[in-house]
Length: 219
Image 1 (cartoon, one colour):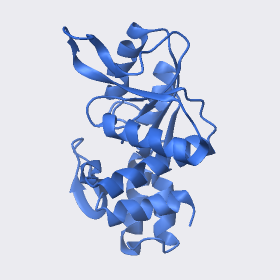
Image 2 (spheres, helix red, strand yellow; image 1 turned 45 degrees about the vertical axis):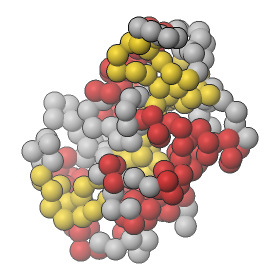
Image 3 (tube, one colour; image 1 turned 135 degrees about the vertical axis):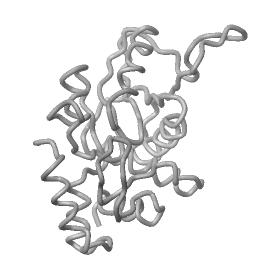
């Protein structure tokens, strides 16, 4: 299996990816659901970091610092940093933000690498639904130093149009902020994995393709 196929199977085995009928926050009724909160063991976190590392290496993403937005992004950036070192000898840094500026001790907004002008920063997140997290975190990063945000890496690109746009959140991130978002897999990869027997769920293929035709962004 490719690392993408392995990741899709990993999501199903971890009960992160499931199929059926789910009413999303947007009000849309989807034939699949992704719940990244199901990753909760040391083994899962270690493997998740390896998939992030694979995506970074495959796409040749330049990274000196992996940044994990508080709170969910923190363990993701840590695990990705360890995996990237183990796989490629990368010896960069990681950091994360606080929700509130610390006013005692060393103080400051960031923990870990103290950002400096010119640092090539890659943001590590689980999924991107609306781009809100990116919109919130970019001013924090730029307020700390004139860093170069080279990319954002997420687990799954839903390839789904926003409620108020024909573009997906991934496409909007590049248009609005100039940040290229890379995903370990996208919805087309998941459909292909079902069709190729990597995971079960062939009975959901018609509904998934219909949903993609109705709400999918053009790529």
